[in-house]
Image 1 (cartoon, rainbow, N blue to C red):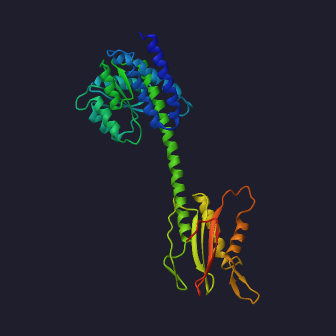
Image 2: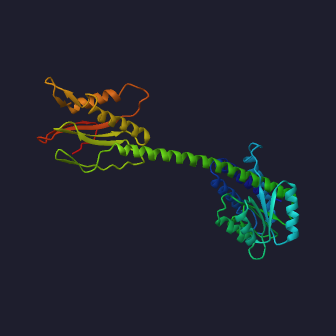
Image 3: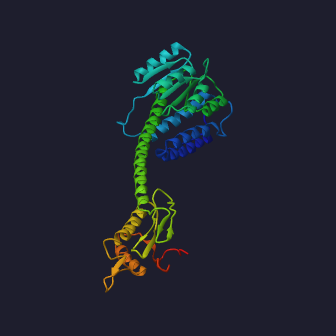
Length: 370
């Protein structure tokens, strides 16, 4: 009989497990860690004597399974077809268990030892393994260790069945990766309760796996779009090692991610003048890259189809627009009083006269280039 102190410790442990289980709805791996941690907490409670039996601990483990069943309970329509593998060297015992599980609606496979079980697991989509502890060739603990070291594409819930009575044996099974325990002879009610708890865990794992696949698919699509955006951004950069009227020009572009809010270019304005600019949009990522491309587009179209960079003097000659006037015009075009625009950019724009090497630049909030 549990003492009042034992009961209090159980309540504390159940409450901590409930909180952990709630957090684990978003992370199945964490949920499994807390499940085993709760079992370890029960096994290591200071008020329990060292001669407590596995059969006695089975009650506490069943309580954890029942609690998990309640916490993971969801829409009854979200069901899955569960396949169970019975591993035992006794053919009559396997037949008895298989008949009972089949009546409960489970698909059942049988294996006479751990090695046969592993071969079957590689061929069939088994969800729950109910294994005897003591078997020839490979026992239940070794089978559990082998399952945890393998990747079968889904989680396998393992229940160890044993007549062993020591706490050390219980801890050995848990450390091997067992999810639950049953004592011999198997009680049908406890077995069914444990299977219900296992179904809840497996359903949760399948749900989270499906959600993770959707997230992975969305990530792959986003990554593909970002790679395409990076190619577009690189396509507007100038050529390397370019010679412009005796001036050598080159650049290095290292975005922090796929795309960047930084962009640059250099080009001829006319036979006498060359121009250059460097723009840095606040922030990172796609939105910053789009704004930097928009600014770059103004420069590249401005040299051809507008008077942003080139103007006509009174004599009809084409002359470069002063850099500060170009920057002022861009400021009017982009920095509007618009609540929907919450980004800005810094800019350097300069013009060099190739006949005398003199140049003029406008530094608009940008770091000094020299």
